Image (cartoon, rainbow, N blue to C red):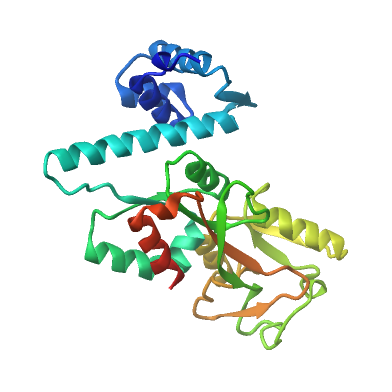
Length: 288
């Protein structure tokens, strides 16, 4: 491999492409033409002798080598920025990037984020994403820390258990199940449920569990995100099974559901991430 063929410009361009996984948007951010970006990425892959991305259906997906190159490219840019800041006598102001989903931000991380930003507003940058995007962001170096519910723990990243909650059924206070200490899956037989859209992890889990228990149910409405799901329950549209960290709005009762596994949120980072004291400090604040 000819090290001279791997330029800093090519690495920086690939880091932007890896963030968007879209040549049009990446080229626009870099202020170059789309064909020019194609050439940069192709030549970088040829210099490294490895494919850096592939197409999966209509999406572009980084290979494992591509994720490693993107992570190195971002680390290279950060080290250069830190050096230039120190050389100019300025304190480096690079923020720690945290990637998480809606539920984590709403019900787990709010107090920590508020406290950190009150101390140093530029210390933290947030990315909102689903669990697959979170893992990709941590793998490519786009984020230093990620928080999400994970069914399978990634072998290439360090994971720390953050919090575990039961799954609960949200019902109106006057509902026949509201006084129960817990309800089995058969207790929701015939119910109209407010559920996430198809193929979302929570929806898939519910369908598998209810099908396995022989429980028939119907979709009252599909809704994206816990706030909208709980809002539909308060309107009387249907019942909903949600993560136990979701607070029951006024007029509703949360009844634990037996037969469903608890939901665990994990904090995820690269094994080397804690060598940065700012990342280690934020991790400690989140765990505390």
